[in-house]
Image (cartoon, rainbow, N blue to C red):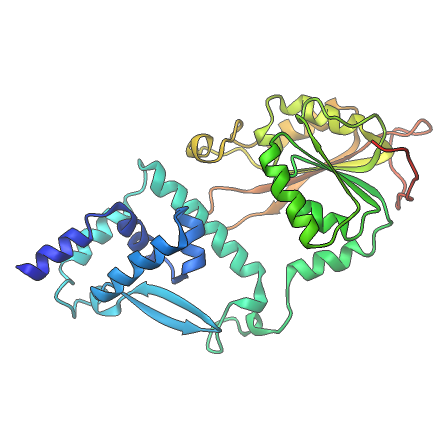
Length: 334
């Protein structure tokens, strides 16, 4: 009875049940679990220690990482707690009405997507896809390499957040103007740029629908996962087009329309993504030409699909296309 009582008390904690639900689906490490659950790493480690001590989860070492999964004895009925597993499994499979569970599941899919793209840090010698072990295979490295092929253009990162994309763009751009509405977020972004020794970034506080940047100031205006936070998305696209030089491009990465209402409270999203046609209409409505909208990233089971959209600001001579390579321009400060 004491063992059963201790077990029931252990499972009476919501965080531990969320952990077990995730580990019933996928083997995960502490860093991944921390990102999914939104809890402190120390708390996640403590909960995992208790679950491991109770024999509910086991720890595996793989490629320098510690991964956790449901103990096989529980799943296969060889443990004293095994009779509980069918009850827990039935509960874990019912995720239709719980916003917290849906959020955990969506973030789990994002972790799995990142694993797939980060080949050099995941996988094992006996994995089904041995290519995951190729040293140095990295989408981040590829993106930086491709950036070196671009001319030294001027870029605006609109809704820059904590500056990760800003810093990547600054590696190849002659100058980046980074805009965000939050001074707190901008402070963290500036710190990141200092640590990476990026000196070609201008930081500005402002709203997407009223940018603190003068007309025709940049060659490329980026809106990466920012448009669904805008108060007026169409106006934000108009502003992006306004600050772009003739022949320059507006590039949008955002979510396709979805039904995940929990993102409003958890992530502060104003719009639940955008239909492909609506995104295209916004770019055309801003006076852009050669507008393209397509899928940038999608994973089976993930409720979120990333759309990539682009458009060219017409030149005075033509309204059909931009030059193949945009030369760098010297301008006054924005």
